[in-house]
Length: 93
Image (cartoon, rainbow, N blue to C red; front, top):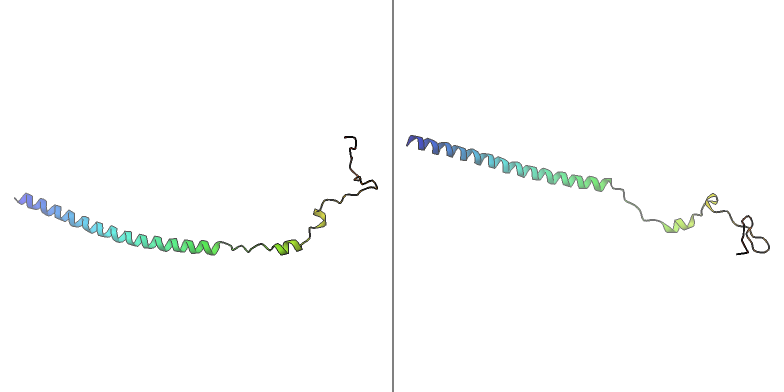
């Protein structure tokens, strides 16, 4: 009988210890979730602050700017017959 009572008491002690560990784990889980939520919020705020905002293209200004002369192709010159000077024109084709 004494052995059975001791066994029951040991089992009850283990159950109590398991309950304490379970409570500790639940409390830690709550703290970890709160920390994760704060970290995610801070991360989103940091990403939003770091992302540069692009302004809309100004097409009216792009049209007003002329192309620099050094980037334009050389203008062609025509002779009196309308042929391009400086290039070989095959008229026999």
